[in-house]
Image 1 (cartoon, rainbow, N blue to C red):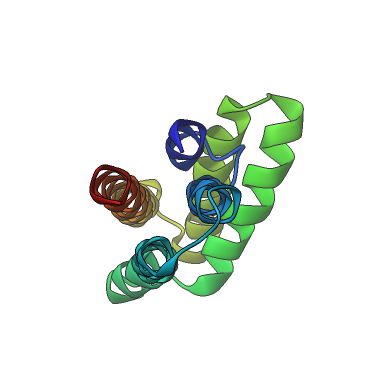
Image 2 (image 1 turned 30 degrees about the vertical axis):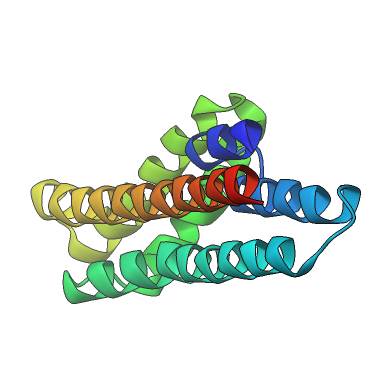
Length: 149
C-alpha cells in the first residue's frame, strides 16, 4: 500500500490500483471472511470515487477556465514523450510545455497562455491531491479492518 501511495505522487506506478490490490491480497491471503470483504468493498468505493474525481474535477475546472480538451490532450501526449526523453520529471515538464504551446497557438498571447496553463496545472494538482486522499483513506480503512478483524 505504501508503494501505491508513492505511485499516486510519482505517476510512474498505478497508485490506487496498487493500494486496492494490496487490500485484495490481504482478503484472499488471509482466507476472506465477511468482515474482510466488507473492508475491501469500502476500499473499492473509495478507489472508484478517487479515480473518477481525479479525472472529472480537473476536466471541469479547466473547461470552466476556457482550456479546451485539445490543449489537455497535447499536454498528455507531450507528457508521455517527456517521460521517455527525461525519465520521471519529463512527464511533468512535457505536460506543462504541451499545454502551454497549445494555448499559445490558440490564444496568441504568452501571458494569457500561461494563465490558462497555470489553471491546468492547479487543476491537475488538485486531482493528484484528491487521489492521494483517496489512497490514504483506503489504507486507513484497511488499518481499521486489520485492527478490528
